[in-house]
Image (cartoon, rainbow, N blue to C red; front, side, top):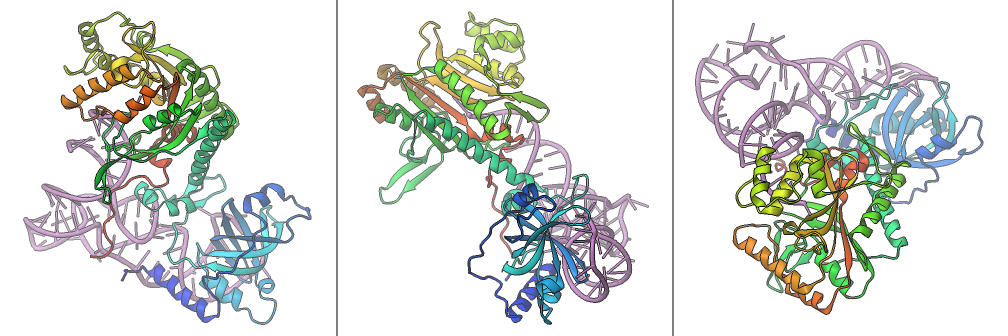
Length: 506
RNA sequence: GAUCUGGUAGCUCAGUCGGUAGAGCAAUACACUUUUAAUGUAUGGGUCCUGGGUUCAAGUCCCAGCCAGAUCACCA
């Protein structure tokens, strides 16, 4: 049995009183709704003859009882609106129980109610609904945090403990208005991208989450086991290799919003499960894909904000095309003044030391370049910027650059100091791909836990022939953080990963 | 994984030098028919994260642990 607080006991007692009064606290009949709070507040003007018979449902979020008349606030999915309730209108006969007892005493903040009434403006000019009948739709047994706003819009007693907000996101969503907003924007972002890609005829697909081999990225996987088949399975770390198989199968363009899983550290930028969109388009290259990314992300910003400019922390980020483009060498030269394009491994190591970039002896040429870039450039790139032409060692699935030895046709889009997109002209030479996998296997043998595995079936698919293809991955959570101005990935995931709560009781 | 910060009423937070546990909101009771962070009066509400230790005495000091956040490490 739970230990109930005083307030919880009061609510259970109220529930009992409601039942004794002959009212069903959890009725099943449909309650037809014909208006929402936000809609009335934005459309109804004093003297209008509209909204004179509204049916509304939602939570009772505040009560201001003044004798025979009361004000209350109803919160539905769209927002809050004030209600005016007068005793003699909701209790037209001699029996005043519904007002005196049920409404005033037994209904608690958080209860779901249904009302009918008409819109009007109070003497102080607040758009309100004058209630003519009142129904209990569902009793609430736990007290909600009470968050209040004053005239200037300052929030008092905000429910702001992150642990409670994330563990009890339902409460967070009820009492913190802006939280709902963030998630609505996140969904708009998905809808915007879907519409963009569908318009171009690309096919949204689904590929396996449980994979016998994990591939397509460098990361440690979650492992599980299938009992009937008695086999080890991995939760995907990416879906790249499956989408490319579909390009081999003859689709021109496929994409998937893919929940991926990586068994690694957590931080405000990392959750063990996260979402990427991956897109593959046949007969295209990474240059073409850069144009697509610019156009699509610009549209996302427009669809969410109505402008290409988005405020993120202290920065105003402008997604208007065209975005800046640097090769990786140019970016390093721009931010450090050093041209590394002709350097060998020894010179790179010396340069890293000179720049105070920590490196170790296991790092090869590609990794050294990547470290210098990561330390000295990435964080400086606030406005959306494409960085192109990465070292081949870091990119085992990308096509080699035809004229720049040691580099691949790859770009990342960086924004607010973080990668938001990664793309390359996909490697479709099966012989080269096998060689790249084999050098990954070597890295694995040397102890790199994130080295890729060799996927024979994927190589078989490539041997049948894959057209030249451009591929793209965008971190949806990272992009959502930027588009909603949130500093932490937990703020854009409904239910971020948490350690288990202590069990109730003893 | 490391470091730092925090965990006290349903929520937000105080709590001095170690000496009876505090406020606002919420709740309860009464009053009040256009208020709006409603108001007025009164009342109730505590496993001070957990477990040890020091002490006549611990929310407070010490040790260990749990949970969370930030930073770092790791990681596209």
